[in-house]
Length: 314
Image (cartoon, rainbow, N blue to C red; front, side, top):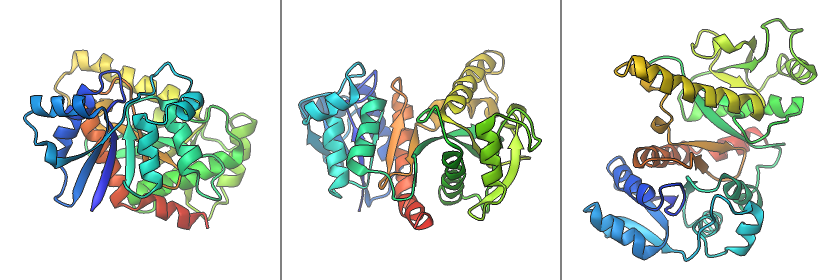
């Protein structure tokens, strides 16, 4: 039995969007896969009734508190012990669920990931992976997309390893090509960090490094399958891709490739480098985005991604 934990109280439109999204996700799960909702039981049951959903199809863990977006992450995590996020992480640590996903406070989710689940031994700094559509059927991985705005060269090197494992295990890409995002393709281009990272990556035996790529290489797969950058650059790229989608949607509303830039299609981003599956979604997630967040969590669980990363860093 696979048990997917969902923060029913997380997000700008929670609990309505979170519970409605869980109802949508249920249609895509197998009989041995179950959703566990963490949140106010009465409110969850009211929404399930409104959705004409059978409450026995879900497990509900009642919580009386919510970590709000404006709360200080670490203080709220320590103080609000009956919150949906805290109880979700405690259940994940205890093995009562196999993965935990939330559209709630990103800061609180990171506190839980680092303080409760903890990073995999050997991983210097976990990162958050994002996705870049390069065709109507293929995605590339980019990381980090916001967790670590400043990165040492050895952290960037490890992002290549983490991204390569994710691309193999979850996206099914054989021997992923890993590239470093830079201001030029030549080896000598870049700042001190990227130059040093290039020196480490070019001799890698952990993955297939194909060199530097520039911004105009991001939206096709001729160069790489995994693109490595620090969280500052990665977050800018991700936000620009979202803006790119909303702009082009006005001119070509039926284009299938453009629709792949809709972040709702992916739901959430995995935290790579922690001991168990943790998925973080956008605060403004709709029910469809929550559904895809749950599906993403399932994929990470089923692929045994965290164990594969542990083995690679032993």
